[in-house]
Image 1 (cartoon, rainbow, N blue to C red):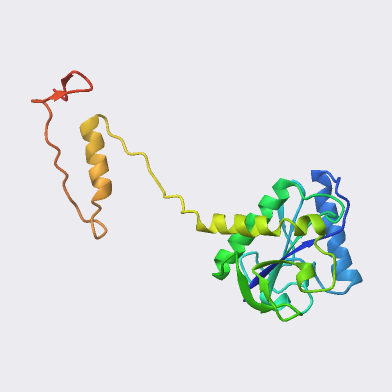
Image 2 (image 1 turned 90 degrees about the vertical axis):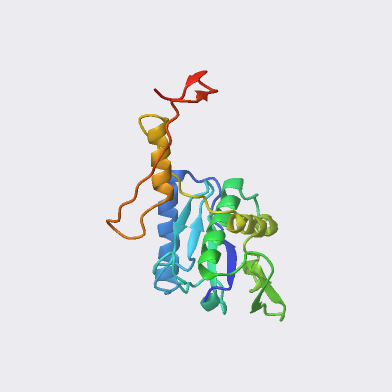
Length: 220
């Protein structure tokens, strides 16, 4: 059950190209799965400097997969790693924005907010923030001073995405003329209650009153 999202960095080079990212992730996998013997990559997700989000540990991106990214907290968290070293360089805005998006999505699935204190306690006994840095739960510099400074923006940005109203579906309705369009709109608004049911829509003729826009009769 996810209660916290941890921000990490991989301490790789920062000047990689977009085409080099898959090989870098394979290298992280080899280190975690083979050298450390974890069986898979530790992070749940990774984000490159171009703002692209990559799946880390297998098991289903929409599932609360237990990773291997924050010792003692893996069962109640999701971990997202920035590819690069952000103790020596600032995180690109595209990367920061991608953190907002992935946490907004994962927290929405988990039914938790992106801001405020979580019920999970740090080693010092204080509540961890919903979006925390690796260093908040373990003795490490991760995710680097510059990315750590972005955590307030990431929290607020994720919260803003989560609070934004969902886009409503729409359809363009039209008929051969304005009466046909009126019938289409009415039919859409008054759907039958059961499959196969029929209904009638009556539209008054406009032959006997002027159309202010057309400066003439509405219809012949």
